[in-house]
View 1 (cartoon, rainbow, N blue to C red):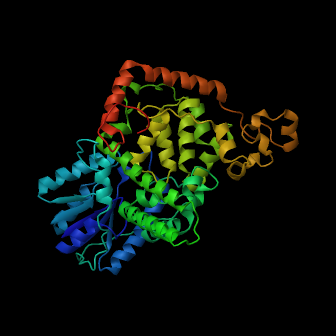
View 2 (view 1 turned 120 degrees about the vertical axis):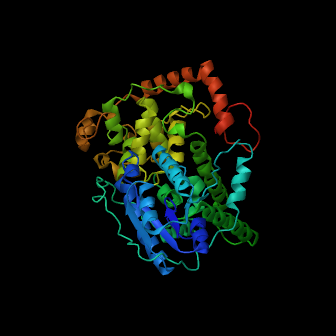
View 3 (view 1 turned 180 degrees about the horizontal axis):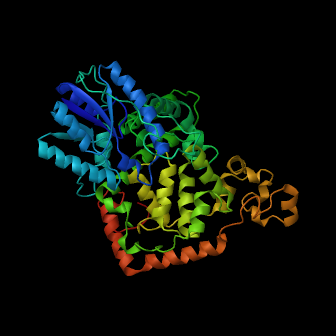
Length: 502
């Protein structure tokens, strides 16, 4: 009996472990709810809802192929051992995962158990992430080669192992999780993932490059594929190859003088670059698992330690900072579990610079709110936006400028911060600067109906700039940055000095 262990790969297409097992003999398709994973600060009922929708569809598709999805709750490899003792296991098949410390230690336990019991464990790549990578030189070419391999079809049929109770899906209540606050989230499943990809490539993506920074337009213009990639409803290879095919199609249509939105080619090019970045950031965690806990530049560890001022953190985490764009973005996350990349960067930047909060607690909170939480991307980006990598340009976002650039009329802000509904555009970025008489007239008293700013932006910005600049000038920080760039820097040519963005 060949066990296919589904983790963050909840699909049947382009799924090599499933195909390999189907070709070998009887198959047991297994999904395990792991309480230790769900107890981590970044995961919870928000993610469980998406997972359960994906599992429900996966079960239907597997039954159509002749098998079922066997569901268990427990610690790995204890669940596997119970199955082995009852039915025997010939081999274990799964995709390789670059996850958090809990999943990493879990995989070490599974590997030890497999060796102890003589069970071969075949792990396959699903991203262009390379285990035991010696050097970043040539990584981009290896990534492209992997993504260009043929997309695997679903297996023709599965021979199920009889006599195993499949069991049902578990709810948040069953697993002791607090129900999520989000009410308008994307739904899970391979079918929806592929439909989302199709709609992006056929219609929504034309303005991607130009509109992805806008919290108003990004809801439609961004691909919205991130949760389907994070939970494996759609393979990265499928997304890459369909995007490449669409780009070729657009070029051909332009040659034929077909009336087409002129923005398509640049948008598709930008999107393809970000697909590579997706794996580039996960590769960092694969190469250096400690970045979940420690600054990539070790000399910047402790830069903000001891500065988790709870009143600042709570104001930020609950969307009550007194800065409308920050608050609207955080409340949008509480509502939908998604916000576009620029606004994510602004949220992390504001917490790290204006509030000078340590990156770990703020990263954990955001992870719990992101439906598409992907550890490698998330922790790398959290460090990048808080200035502790040593190799990335320091970007301190102004929440005032972001309003003027991205939401000057306040449409997005007023959707998620209804207290500001009556505030005119000229005051929407800084409502605390409205004259008292105008506040009374509008029925929006700052400090009562909407919070006063938790910090004063100008001095906080200047102080953060001085502190981070002074830290990065230290010789030991600069020396450590060289090491970081040599190990993690994004490049198509051999490593050189650390500079610019990675």
